[in-house]
Length: 124
Ligand SMILES: [Zn+2]
Image (cartoon, rainbow, N blue to C red):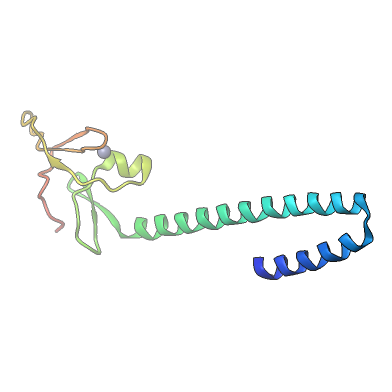
C-alpha cells in the first residue's frame, strides 16, 4: 500500500472518528498519524541509503588499482587518489604537484596526499 492509499484510508477513518465525538479516539488517531509520518520518513531515508549503497557497490566493481593509483576501467578515467577512495569511497582526480622532488609528481586536491604517479598517466 502506497502513501496515497494510506492517506485516503486515514482521511476516511478521521471522518468516522469525527462523527463519534470521542476525544480519546481522536487523540489516539493523532498519535497514529504522527507514528505513520515517522515511519514514512524512516522508510524514505532507508530507501535513499539503499540506493546510495547500490551505486557505491556498482562503482566499486568498476574501480581498479594500477601503478599506484585507482582508475575507472569502464570510463578509463583516472588516476584517482588511493587514500580518498579507500577511506571515503570518493574518486578524486590527481592533479599536478608543485612538489616535484623524490619522484612526487601529483597530488590529491582533497586530502593533499602526494603520489609518484603522473596525473595524466592512463590505464593500461
Ligand atoms: Zn585524496
